[in-house]
Length: 365
Image (cartoon, rainbow, N blue to C red; front, side):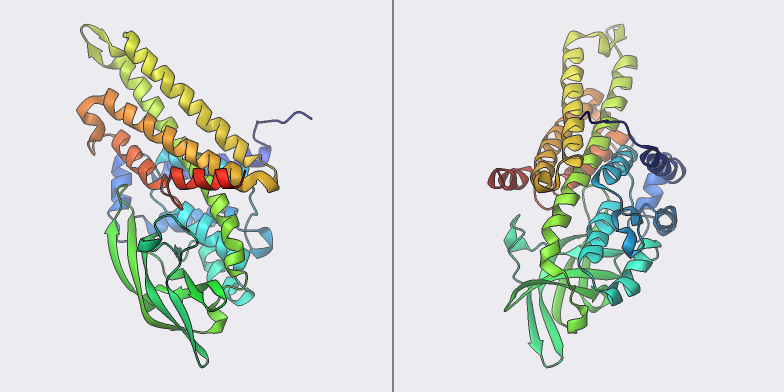
């Protein structure tokens, strides 16, 4: 049976909604800079608009109040957001944290937190990565200790994306039974906020005797984590595709107009060869994203890891080429080129780098 790669009518509407958001909220670099200067690293009113448009809920099942979007739906939106270099933490707050609450949270948590997240009224972030773990997602040293009717959390988390704005944290911690996920008020932790390469604000989170109750444990817990990681990798790959497409199109337009030795530099054969190589890499990225989005459930996690690894390497290569062909201007804040490349660097570390994703891809073969 032939497979159609054309978006359905519903997918076309989703893509149009994402494009309207980019057009209205991030129309130029001035708007992007204004959003990045906000205390959260993005504009709160833009986050609410994402909720009102249903784009946050796209990552959440219909039974939990979301739209129940497929991976292909999420990839379409992610590509648009990548092309727009959107500052809002849609991947981190909606796809990852929202996906975990949807898959693992119990009814009370979903009513108290997930509903507000879907409306764009709050931000939830995953606090999982620890310094000693490097890219081993299964290494968690944060401890959960039962003390009477309370559970005490002790440990440190690093690189908590969207951590500056988060009202709630999903914290991974190890107890005698294994690893569990806990919903913790961010105010109960010590946070040190810092900027990442792309201007977004992350946090180092310290948990010093933070008290929670058994009711704060996510019911589905660690069992839901691998599925959320796989989906996040596929969506990150699609966002990298969008950013790489922006870099390619911007550079193509530049080499057609930049004059050197009395003619556009795009007429020189060496430039044409380099742009051809970038175009081939871009189209291969698109093929990898499509393969992951359309993969059978049994093969999805491996396909997502492969797509992520390829898009991370190829996207960064296209970004470096774009900077080189723009000359010194390519790394300045005056052009979108440098900002898109920095965003690619952050996306390329989603749940580990390309090598970590390839390790999973190889082991899953």
